[in-house]
Length: 490
Image (cartoon, rainbow, N blue to C red):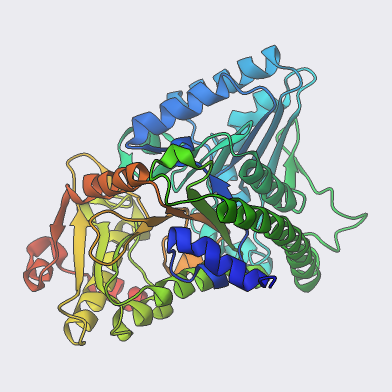
């Protein structure tokens, strides 16, 4: 009897045991790779070295999506390496997707950093600047440049080099190359996934501004400003954007279905009892990318993450990291309200490890605001039936800030994680309701990769301390009244 597609998904998952996989695989594209092609980077220096090395050797394409590019010496070196590569490989395709507001802030900014690449003779470089359609009218006229990014941003962080890619939560600026801890996965020789992300970035870029040689921008969509993100119709722009992404996604799901059917046949014909060696199979790792584009009613990341969390059995264990502690109500209810989820360990930034510590003006109150949000969550946990299974840790390392985010899933009675989420979302209000985000749900059978995932989260927790009731009674945890008022409306 011929099995249904859903039954085939269940069979594939018998190899991976990823909670919720059959349902997730119907809404997210699935890619397969061998664990030997996954490399986990440990620190900002390794991240920077990886970008420089791959930028100097790429032959066909460099596709970069990030929030912004910094203006320091390390960033200049990265641009210089790419420029040299363009001259030696004239057919190299170079694409950048940055956020319009963040890349345009100040006299020295990302746009000016990238002008030399655009002005290279016969350059195949295009720089696209996404502008949220919500920033328009009085918002755009009155909100200062330093604050207008609160409306919404291009926040995806994907760095593609030929058929390999780096997915991370890290931006391209000095701190992220030196002393701001994040997470960074290199996925090598996975052309299908690299093509997927190039396609996604291209779709967003095609509905973004194009940076010109004289540092002005062009809007190339349509013959008039009807589809302009802040001068045209909000409804028409959002409809066009949503339609383009939905069409792209449906096509990717069709490709995914073909891969899954092919992989079912491969697994069916492979006698898994004959060998436990990872190399005995061509694939032992699943990759499911998610996207979040809330202004366009695209919520695949938050919906899939919630579904994944709700599928975890009682005996499972979750370690969840966020650089900015502001979990949405749905995430809070999922973690606290469901008594059949197992142990949960949350890792966030100590106020001294918050990137906004010491900032001028209102931004200087942001660490205190996150302390308030963390305290509120802690008290909610203590007043619930979950107080014995949920713990909070704070990362603090002298001279470092904390920007890591993601999730590790430990199956019942197992000491190493079998799945992780890696990418740009922070599981907070911004990630769910404001910004363009993407991350990858990775699930592996490889004991070697599982141990590397274990080591990764252990390195982060090594510099963390447990949050207790007494934590919020310390002198440096006093929250100013104005911060309490502002946080109430967050």
